Image 1 (cartoon, one colour):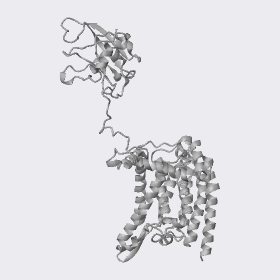
Image 2 (tube, rainbow over the protein chains, first blue to last red; image 1 turned 45 degrees about the horizontal axis):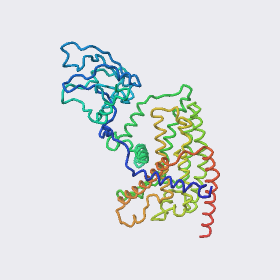
Image 3 (cartoon, rainbow over the protein chains, first blue to last red; image 1 turned 90 degrees about the horizontal axis):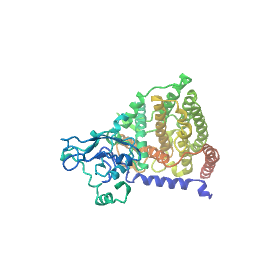
Image 4 (tube, helix red, strand yellow; image 1 turned 120 degrees about the vertical axis):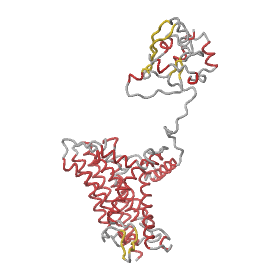
Length: 176
Length: 331
């Protein structure tokens, strides 16, 4: 080491110059309650179970989402549609129980990709924190979107033409 | 009256130093720092204080009860004592009588300050020892050896000031630095040595080995909680404030500022402005303390000892000799 390196002072002053420069940098903090971080339109957050245009549940309880789920977070119980329930369920079979364990879910979006009925989508909403583990098991009450047309959840950003084209492609195993 | 004012001032400054430290730390790391309690986080120190008071008062079973309580009390007491000898400004004139802005104008002011500073190590030593914890003891041992080592170089760098002014009175030293006749111009090396030693004496980074979280959990205050811990942390900030005041007094001309005495201000306004000048200088030192803390990593223990004994003390002695020769030649 040279004399100047050995007495450290030039190095210390240089370090102080660098830290001083940081004083005037733009702060990277997002001031949370006032400012919310912009989410991408195709953010993969909380799931929604879609209804069709007439307000009927699209899900037919085929179980492909549960099979596709790498975290095994999805369970469901299927039931047959009774006469007179046509305005509630689109297909002849529907899910009486549909549960996603949000603590297991890794928000990969495979369920959405596997779904042949365009019934499950991931949304920009994030899963809320809870005080008890049990509350993270979301049932149909939390997942199915409201039937009121004004409060329907828009998933058109995730359902792009490319996605639809991809889903029609029968050469992929999970689209069969 | 003045004494209680300075006591309250030191406590207030220490309180807000904790906030400023966290703010400055944030800015250095491209963050905002605390800004939720009150506007700009101004109520944060109160919230911290309230939190410390309501924390559980824990005392280890094997601790020596008397010494365990004596430790933080002594640290706080000594930290507050030093400010007595510092001249805070020129005389106030009230009803024709002059009131010096100094609690005690002892003619051996420097000796007093250094005597008190040396006792400061007892608070840490006693606290660390009484906790009956190996980390606390190690921290305390480190603190005492560090403070003793750096006190030598510190005193030696002050001797040059005493040689130049020919007085041990803080007031006299400030008076001789009137205008821009500051000691730092004549003693840059002495100032540098004093600054480094002040970092070591106040246990601030990069010399914060006594509390060194990475090795010693919390160092000497590992076993302390609640307001006893608060006292230790508080005392560190008071020490920063006081050492800034000592440095400003000895090297940066105290409450003097070039051209200020030629403005023709009335005595009391002049005293107030002078006090603010001194306060600004102290704030500057406070900022340098924080700046260094968030720039430099901690020294290793052997590096610390090597720097103290093999670099600073020889340099300080050399400085004394050179100053002596120059003074002799100028006579």
